[in-house]
Length: 337
Image (cartoon, rainbow, N blue to C red; front, side, top):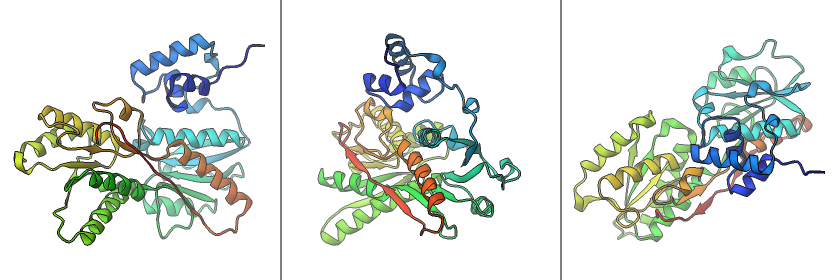
């Protein structure tokens, strides 16, 4: 009997994530055309049966029980992080025999919410407190992912965002950097704010331990719209005198870091020769950027699967104390810093 091929088999053969294989086979955004073609070629070589793929969330099998997944549309369309977290949720729900219903706003909530088919709620990313209160009022167990609200009692699944930026910042200091810039935007998410806090904690501690240190830390706030980042970086870099150039950049995520490296290159500034650049998240593009990006690995699909596991636990132990689960970070050193 011919062994049934799986998406994981294709992923292992190509050295990419299962999520990337799924996106490529389903014809979705989030992977390059080159990667998509490699996946299709490998699928054909291995005899993968394309009809096994669900091309959209709407074509999921029918389940007696389901999970309500709350996520903003802007997050749902973000391929590097949130789409992968959502993929983790879907994979784990399927493993438990649960379906899922994705909602963006209170107006999208099914009625009635007391339907016994809904086992619980998973909230992905930042959302308004009013939305959380509305979800909480249903009485269903609720899991927050990459978001924390002191007024909402729920189990919480987080990445070690502060640890990630602390690792990155300490790495820059170990390379002799003394004029650092953190690049991000606090309003993007609590993750970005935590990454700034972690960087600031390291530099504050460094100055306390080294009273004669000339270490400085600045902050650049990128525009809300990513297509404006290049213009922002160009304006910033054009205003810096050559002898005042900073010697290390820590970016709140890899996409910002990759965009910054492109702008630095266009201004004739060598990375890492004149200034190392470090990102956070370890997205697929970070390994193939020019130069390959030093970054910090943080969980993506695992955040989603752990959220479903936390919901399963909450259903079994309904009166247990709420948990805050933090998944660890790992520094990945490449050529950019």
